[in-house]
Image (cartoon, rainbow, N blue to C red; front, side):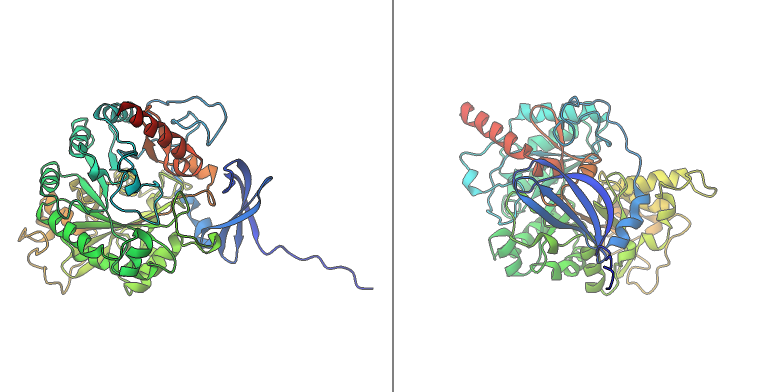
Amino acid sequence: MALPVKTERPEIFWEFTRSICPTCKRLIDAQILLRDNRVVMRKRCPAHGWFEALVFSDAQLYTDIARYNKPGTLPLEFATDVKDGCPYDCGLCAEHKQHACLALIEVNNACNLDCPLCFANAGTHLAQTGFQLTFEQVNFMLERFVAAEGEPEVVQFSGGEPTLHPRILDFIELAKRKGIGYVMLNTNGIRIATDDKLLAGLERLKPHVYLQFDGFDAATNLALRGRADLLDTKLRALERLAQADVRVVLVAAIERGINDHEIGRIVEFGLKHPAVFGVNFQPAFRAQRHVAADPLQRITIPDVIRNLETQTHGLFAASDFVPVPCCMPTCNFVTYALLDGDSVQPITRFIEIDQYLDYLKNRTLPGLNDEILHTLERLWSSSAQVGSERAAADVQFVLAGQTPPVENTRTAERCVACQAHLPLDAHAPRDLARHIFMVNTRDFMDPWTFNVKNAMKCCVEFLVPDGRMIPFCTYNSVGYRERITLEMMQATGESQ
């Protein structure tokens, strides 16, 4: 009689953490498993059973990047006490492991689009009944941000569609008066394409525009934004922003089978456009309104950067991207390129960035320059100031003495892109900034992929009217958005 043979499990049990049930949002245990070189979250709700979702499509890369986990920085003050534990005490609470690199303020929830993909659950149906923040509320929220951060680096005004708010220019000006040097406007660009008064205000205030730009195909815009005719509007907005010398980052939500084939084309377009200083790819996540899809087939960061390498024929390679250390390293990857005419040269090919950002090794290794480390930490941060003079100066600094050779470009003698008519090493900072291009990909968590460990180190926070700061993925996944939005809508209704 043959003895029974034990069989191995088809995966490696990598980690135990906590998550939430995608159905009822209760806090539950979760496993992180390495299966077929993919990273899968597996969890069970007592009421709704088992769930699995893909969190990272390259298990080898997932395990290799632990060394990029930077020690957190405490905010100057916390807003809430620890009572029920993460993720229920957000404010930030004293158990949060990182300060706020970037803060978002949603000034309204009305929109001029009804996107099938919208984590804010915004839309045209909220034009009359939605909330709209007052100047006093925004002032208080910014004051609380300053109190927690001292000298906040980045704030982003979002919505809904924030350009529909009658005081959006006042909010931008207010943030600048409070000393926040890098102020962003998150917009679909529809009003910018036609509203001369709004454009004049943006030209005067010079915020950085975070422009929704998912691709060129009519089918892409129809599937993700509900309209097939948006491309001409986006291009018109970009043309006007270039004329106004307002700097833009293109932001593309990427959904498998819808616009993942357009990743390379978006970057190549951005490289040539005078208004565009970077591209941010955000794999689609399943919070609020989203396209129906199998959570085990979702697109993740490695998919984005592999597609970019293939579609640009190696102009950007997967190896050019480095995890951002201020959050958990699996959340965000970034690279920068030096542009000179036809030449696109990722700076990661000229400096060994990983030897500086490896936080598991002895930081006092001989030969490492602390100044370079701190400069790289500014660039590889959620508070990085894309398109700014500071970012340009930082890139120039780390490449000092290692400046890439420039050969066979049409601008070896003078600069066409910024009209400086000078070689790159003689550029003023504002002109040099036109030659630094960022590509970023950030994967936000949703109720399927929510990991308490990652949430505890989030550095992108929503500011809310009572002065709290709530981590992005926690706000959108755990139930904070629903409760706070209802409170704001009720308050708006009572004031009308």
